[in-house]
Amino acid sequence: MIGGKTAVLFINPLLWIALIISQILRPFIGNGYESLFPAPIVTIGAVCLVVGNFFYLYIYLLACIRRKHYSLVKWTLLIPIYWLLMSVAACIALYQLIVKPHYWEKTEHGLHLLDAEAVSTILEKDGIALHQQHTSQHVEHHNRVTVPAPQRHRLNSAEFPSVRLALNTINHEYKPAFTAKEIQALRHAQHATHQDLWFIATILVAVCAVVASFVYATFTHTLSSGTLQPNQVWSVWLPLTHLLVLPFMWSDPLLHTGIMLPAALCYLLSTLCVFIAARCLTQDSRASFIGSLLFLFNPTLLVLNTLSLNDWLCITTLTMTCCCFLLWARHNRLSSLIGTALCSLLATLTCYDGWALFVSMLAFMIAIGWLKRQSRAQVESYLIAFSTLGALGIGVWMLCCSTLFGDPFVFLKQATPALTTMHTMRQAVSFAMLASIQTLTPILFSLAFLALVLFVIRRRLAPETLACIAFLVPFAFALLSPDSGYVIPMVPTVNILRALQQHDGIATIAPAALFLATLFGPEMRKAIATVKRRNEQAV
Image 1 (cartoon, rainbow, N blue to C red):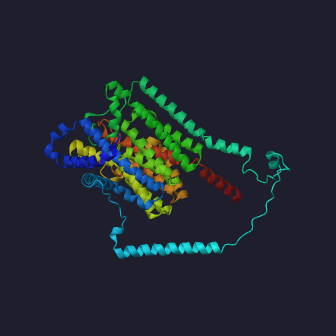
Image 2 (cartoon, rainbow, N blue to C red):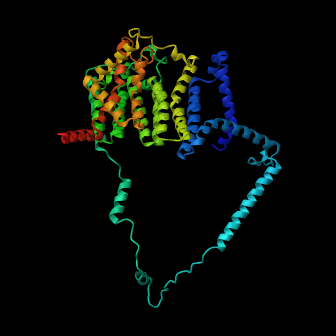
């Protein structure tokens, strides 16, 4: 639209004023505000307000990090003030256009802050510096050593009747930097994509497992446990699950069977994240394939309808967040950091375990920056880039609670009643450990614990070690807050204790598969070969 950018400068302050007045006068206006602005318009406006303004600001932030201007990242958060000043400048320009149409208010670039003597001193210094530079160039020109030009042989046109014969007489001493085969190999490497056969095998096995589980649930007529209860809609449970359930709420059969489709997608994405994380640690696709198989064929996950959709979303978003965080800790890529923040956004909108993971990752990022000897400005810029996007889910949820219930902390008052079966931390730890052992089986639980100990001893205080510990944060959160009421998954509340046991168990499946993959990695094989060689030498 022609003139749209200029018009926005005048409309923007009015919209902000209307928003502030509506929030302040909401208790007095009541339903009058809703009659002026229907719910669809309010929803669209809220999405544009949060998403549009935020991502416009976030682009500036990422640009500073990409260009390594780390000291400027924190100042990008003040861009809304810059937008306000743009509106003020537009109003002044409109006034001057009417009153003084031929007036040009030129920018003085800070010189108006100084007095006349200071300005003359600066100009005098600039003149002296320019004169010295010109003098040095003049002296350098006179002190140059003249080197006679080499005598070149001039070709006689009578000796060579054609240009081709003249060029053939020239001795071609230059050799190509690459041979024809090397050039062909380089071109092939630029256009070829790296295909990991073990990764493709993981995808195929996961798809087959999903299809088999879906067929089993269809023919046995077992209903999904991910259905919502009337008291679970827009209460303490976070909104991402509700948004995914909305397309399936047209009928009861569709709600019970169609909800398995997003669960199957979560199953596939979680498996791929486990494979990528294991390959990042071990640099071995075979070991990663074994770890992903241990995740795939876990009895609790293999039957899709045994878990609620909220549990599947919790597993997927937490695993994706930790996987991207591990990639960032290993390679220090900006894309991995953005992926971590985006997945953390989804995790904070899914379960309160994601809130605990978000807070712990802030501490891990500071520790990783210290281990990598990064500057304070660089660590600060990474924290701002992660926290602004990762905490957006928490801010959106509080905004929803404030809009719908009039209290941004209403979820603290509607938590599930405390479980009175566990009175001490010792009982809570025993309960969580038993749940993990039942989910993983005693053998795999013991091997996973052994792999964790060996991994920490071998890697010690490495950035990858802290990134892998992040996989254990959801289990630690479920372990340390058994009576808070926020770790209960979205299932029918007939047996809360069983739901809590299942939630604690599935929190250990992904980290167990990851650490078990390290047992089959090249480092472990080298360690075993070294021990055998030493034993043979001792014998």
